[in-house]
Every structure is written in structure tokens, then in C-alpha cells.
Image (cartoon, helix red, strand yellow):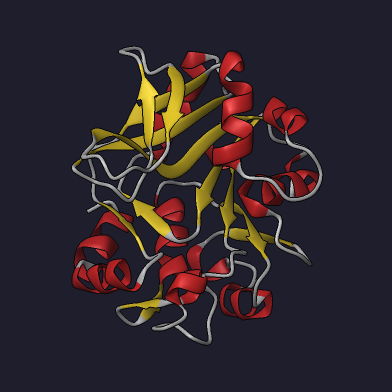
Length: 245
């Protein structure tokens, strides 16, 4: 578990249909939506590379060829990119399971949603994960009066006890940022086929130790037209955050 972070693989979930964003990004997969003059996905690749995490697995699906053509083998970011292309939607967990052949040499690995950005130190998350000894660790951030997200219930030590679904009630709690450190054994709990990390797998593995690591940096997702517009306004800050400035 003490392998160099340079040996860690990061799995990026970029295969979703992105239906809510189609009105403003009609012809590209969601992670390829432009923020400034570059694809959003490039932000994530640059962020990982700047932190010496350069072995990447991209789980593609919808319009996979656009992503694969744009990013290629990753050499432009001093990274190595492999692709796990699904032929039908598999959900966030199913995509990770489908990529298992590319994770054979990993005792632990990162997983990231391809439509959100969290300003954070991946090395700190990996260290937190290895120290906790749990099966999974998730980056979370604190939000006020946010009705769009469900919340993560965690104790002072970070141990997650449960999840609350989205509701109309004003909530002040911890929200899953879509960045995870997983121990390899989580793959034993993910079935073949379509399934969701958030709905199906995390509740199933709570007894194996799921921990939350609170982050303080900027968070943005581009899942809706409003949030996509907000990302444009934050463009310079996001690129600075990706470079660790």
C-alpha cells in the first residue's frame, strides 16, 4: 500500500450521455464541453499530471471516439492514457468493473467523475485512504442550503455511516465530490453489468469501511446548463487550481 503515487492509476468516468447538458452542448460528450478554449476533461488530466498521477484509464462510452481522438495516448500532458470503451451504458460502478483488466497491477486506485472538478491534493486523499484501512475513501465538501445534492453522513473520524437522498429541505452537510480512492477489493463487490457507485455499491460496502475526507477548495460540476455557465465564469480560477497555483 506504500507504492509511489507515480504508480497509482486514476480512472476517469467519461462515458455518460449528458442529457441535461444537450441544450447547450448538443454534439459533444459532456466531458468534452469547452471551458474557456479547452475541453473540461483536459482540466482533470492536467490536474492529475501536475500531481504526478500520470497513469490514466478513461472509461468512455457515448461518443467515445471524440474523447479518444482528442486526448490520444496522453503524451501532451506527460501522461499515459488507456481506454476502456463500453458498448452500452454501465453506470459509474459498472464502468469501473468493466475497466478491471486495466487495474490488475493496482493495490489501490483513484476514480473521478468526468464532469466535475474538485480543487484538492490527490496525494493527501491517497494517504488518508491508506491510513484509514477502509475499502473506499471519498472526497467531500461542505455546503449550505443546497437542495441539488444528497449528503454524506460521517463521524468525526470520517467514517461514513450512511447517505441522505436529495430533498427539498434546507441542508447543511457534506456532499460527495465524485473523487474516490479505492482499495482493489472493492471490485469484488461490483457485479458485471450496469450499476451505480452511489446508489448500489457504497451502501453495500459501508461495513468494509468507507471514509470521507473533507476538502476546502473550489468545486464545480457541469451537469446542467446553469452550472456549465458558472464554470465559464470560473475558467481562470479552475485552470490555476488544476496547475496547483
